[in-house]
Image (tube, rainbow, N blue to C red; front, side, top):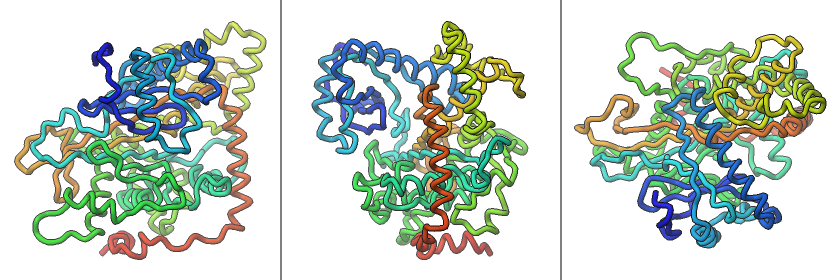
Length: 486
């Protein structure tokens, strides 16, 4: 990328989260990630410039030195830190402002530091050398936490029976964040059971919230609407998908198209990318008590069948193993946080040695990996557990990008690229993104939020009327077959 020849007209708005905004190049397969700030902070340019550079550097080093070794080299793309011309950044900010969702405009793009991250555009399959001219499809899933807490420090029994995501739904509904409860349960997606995974993805399609987005040729075609009251149109999605799943011998029904698309996603999530491996694959298998959520809409008999577990090197297994570094739950972690806080009050110069704010290097990862198994009352144990919790929180909030490029029957592909769960043949790639470090200072907030979510769930579960039957279960014959296999 030639930084001295940057032109804002070569870039377009791609999307944004709470703390950063992404633009994509209109010709090349790359994106720029730029920070955002509350409008009132934007005036303090000197502080913002210093903070922006350190913030971007922290994101890059944390992704490269901490999360990539834990999640796998093939899944994580750390990108590179870039210093952009300020005139380009300011013109770009003006160009994309009208494309930003209104609800995101309470923050402004950083136009003072010029700092950013240059990353591959994961909605494309690169290198894209396939003969098929249909644009690639990309599915972005934010799976959330895939297990029930198993810590002896958990005080409310409901946390051992209902997953955090399902409980949080009630709290978000009450606060007006969403207008409808999602039927998606992360424990179904992480089960390794194709039946449970199938239904989990169906539920994401029915109610995507901020957990599902679908792109075609790099353009967003399916997600939660800006107006949360309006549900996305599944029929419109089917129209986009139909050219990828018709087989030339008759009309494919909407049900069949959606079914094949979901099977494609499931296969990619379970793929290890090594079709040459012989013998039985090792599995990541959790105890039954930690993979069954009572809030899941699935029939209890299907849940009790559990699941075959996840192939050890598939993307879901890598994420789940990292999430499970939180083995104390926030209730067991919070007293250790207070131990660290008390120690730092007495010995403030120790903050750097203990790497509470980085640097995110090999030494940080070593502290995460070598934390003692039992509490020996040392500050090293408390710090190690706090760092493990922060890493686990990153894994609980990450996103998975799955990109599919259709290809012909006679095209030769590398084995790790090919996926063919249905009649159609695709090349695919799987990546993990949104791997920012979670701030040490947010732990008290997480402790309070956990209490609020649990208390609200206990208060509301008896008062809330049972959800009406989902149209996906009553109208789609595939689901009947799933529940009543011949």
